[in-house]
Length: 142
Image (cartoon, rainbow, N blue to C red; front, top):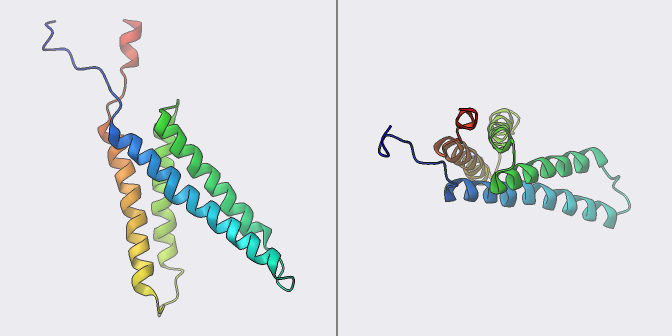
């Protein structure tokens, strides 16, 4: 086999690193900020009970998105699964959330724009993940 027939070795692309950074910054940081703000707001007013279920779910989702972002940036083992699951999870949350929204929301433009941004982020992560070539593990055993 000549040198021109060999496929070039897989390399890390900046698109996947940027996708991991976006996963780390937008959903993970946003969910953690939402949960922390909700907790501080509820601690400030003594009359409203604290909903620990909402806070716990937000912190758990923030941890999952944060781990997916770090795994994608560092290319840890299984990073493709984490990035794909996080992206498809965001798409599922948006699709299922569309039907739960009130029919006449006064801020419908902001709601639609934020949903489009989240879906665009998820699609970007999926495309970046797909375009980065996998390492050929079979070549190790030849």
